[in-house]
Length: 68
Image: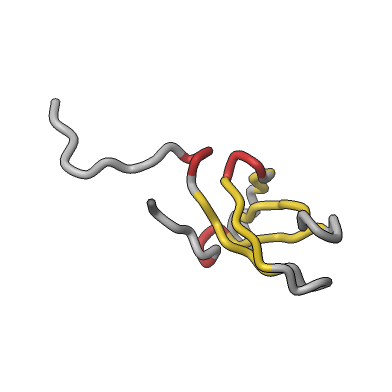
């Protein structure tokens, strides 16, 4: 078997988020967040802001997923 394009494991995917409370912009790996399944509104990630510890919900489809 030959890999044509190397991907990355789900827990290693990186996302960018901005805290609504303190406006801190930060990057986190998917493995650092809690995945929440929502059939009605779509899946999202729950993560805490590293500065103010406020809870942040990040839409998986619009999260600013970054490949490296």
